[in-house]
Amino acid sequence: MSTSRRGVVVLGATGSVGTAAVDVLLEDPTRWRIRGLAAGRRGPELLTLGRRLEASVIALVDEQAAEDLKPSLRAGDPELRVGEEGLLSLLALEGVDVVLQGISGAAGLDASLETVRRGHRLALANKESMVVAGPLILEEAKRTGAEILPVDSEHSALYQCLHAGRAEEVRRLILTASGGPFRGRRADQIRDATPADALDHPTWSMGERITIDSATLMNKALEVIEARWLFDVEPERIDVVVHPQSIVHSMVEFVDGSVIAQMGPPDMRGPVRYALSWPERSPSTKPVFDVSDYARLTFEAPDRETFPALDLGFEAARRGGTAGAALNAADEVAVRRFLDGDLSFPDITALCSSALAAHPFTPHPTLADLERVDAWARCEAKTPC
Ligand code: MG
Image (spheres, rainbow, N blue to C red):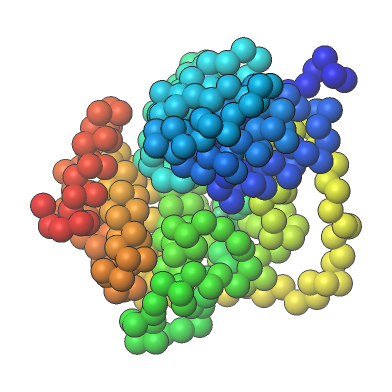
């Protein structure tokens, strides 16, 4: 078994998905060989993880954080690499099989592209890669034979459900949404919502941006775009249903009317374990799932009037091209401004809506086109350009 250990790189190792990945890797260390770990600026945490997982190399994107970490390095520690280049260099290490992509935001796009260019499996938690540049990444993956395994819990569920039939037998993808902390509220009740209100997610524990995106339903909007590219299903055949318990992670309806759902506790270690281990299933050390703990599972239609962000996702998925890049970039800036107290909660979505409508649209963008639109939308969301 030790000869067939899978070589792993974890990008965003100190973030919420990275932390889940570390737990999974430690469940059965005989399955994995940790080649590299990368983080943005949390040096001491990264070094601790590097030592625990016996990583060969660690990379810190922030140069000052790397400088600060250097005095702590001892003989036998992982080699430290620095900057965006240092991070990308992990993908060129000998013996890499799978890259767990846990970087947050469109900043993760280069690493996703480089992973598939090199033919490694991309275990993708960075949904922005698909939202911004889905067709480009898929084209590159097709060329090199790289596998893309979603780590977003809904898409991991869809991936698993899709195995129950053939692609041409799929009628509909049904994405579940928790509804976030403001489910059931009316627009006038969330007008003055504060960052603390919006960060209080009922079922999932995640990073700041995705938690705010769950409150506006922009996260689900981005997931509609992600599903559209990842599974090559037109947006007209994608539905969203609110399921507050977050136990059913998504469903696939087939042409014969049969609906396959994937269930489990709301825990990112599930999708991470699946994406790293596929096509095998590696045992989890978690207690057995007790159905009676979840006696009441409920489903309801999303409130599209109070949470208009959802329809922006369908619009961007229908338009394709640069629409996803514009929507995502505007949202990254708008969420930051909301967290800084510089924007009201409803204005997050309003800003995204105007950036999507006004951006210089291109139907078949190159990477350079996408970067231009990303920069334009960021500027527009800071202050009208
Ligand atoms: Mg998700």
